[in-house]
Amino acid sequence: MRGFVFWFIQVALIGSYLLAYGFATPDTRQDIKQEITGRQQVPQLTLTRVEPLRVAPLFDRPEMVSDEDLAAVLWQIRPEFPRKELRPNLVEHAIRAWSVQAEFHDPAILSGQEMLDFLLDHGTYLLSWTDKDTPLLEDRGTGVGVNWGRYRSASVHHDHMLASVTEAGARLDSTVFLPSQRVLTLEDVLREALRDFRLDERETEWSALAFGLWLPPAKNWRAADGRELSFDLLAQRLIRGHLELGVCSGTHRVYSLMLLWRLDQEFDILGDEMADRVYAHLELVRDLISDSQFEDGHWPSNWDAGAQALINPRKDELKDIVIATGHHLEWLAIAPPELHPPQAHIEKAADWIIKTTKQQSHAGILARYTFFSHVGNALAMWRKTSPSDFWKRWQTEHPDYRYEPPATTPDAP
Image (tube, rainbow, N blue to C red; front, side):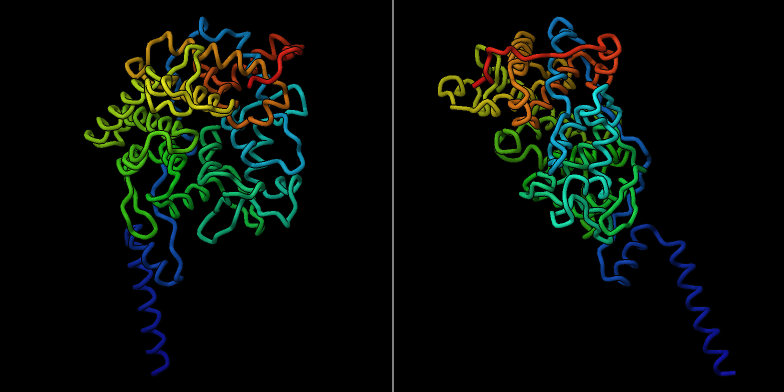
């Protein structure tokens, strides 16, 4: 009888616990799991969409970017890569520009789906790398981690892979195959990114971008360590510090800020004061690039110096001015006209970047592919389209099209 009473009490206690757990808030459930397992839990944020948001370009300027020029530039940035030891950084930039929908008549060119498989399927990844190389994906128990840093077999920037496939239009339920043979989804990549995000990181540009395209209408969330995070804090972090010192001469910060401001217009994810601060910061950037543009149309890497950049010109390499000019054209394509420098400045920049891209040999493009991919994306945006959509139409209308760089013109210095 005593044994029966003992077990009856135990069952009753367990039943009470389960009932209480069932009625607990998501945060409380997370605390309970963390206490039991001893591991930090993935933030319990409700995600309301399976497809990412898209911030559409605002302009169609055929007088600035002709169909013929756009086709030539896009030909130059087709993802034609050596398949052995294919660097994730190349694929991330290519899929961001071309999207998961990209298709090419040439089987030597990676399609959008092939690029997505390389990034999300460890088995496909192993066709290029070996199991002795640092894998791109990592099973962390709490979700899917993405290895990044100095390894050629890894991503280069924190959350860059997530941001790239998000901008490429990958669905949140896209399957992820891990080295551990566990099968998860892109949602587990996103939740792990939310879990391990730190506001004091050196690079927050891609985290802010990815969170902005997945989380609204939510404007704040709880980190795994209990801290409250918000788009206000992300925007403040992107504004803070010297303008040029962010990745790619600070231009990624500008793009992410412009994207957050556009999203705020629809979803009200920023407080009124922070929205005003972001807008004022973008006005400052507008004024600086209005004053720092060179006569031929390019922007230097120290664009933030304004007119001083012309008085004391820096000895930039080609990649530096391609980065500055291409990236500025990219964020300006989603910016309202009042945040633009004079239209003549934009037209000169487009003219310079088109000529420079068309001059490059295939080897020259491949050596700087990550930077030129932004050029192709930016120019397509100025035609209010995407590289993938434009290229599908162009291939249909011009099935035998090929672009050949001028044989007598070396890569631009």
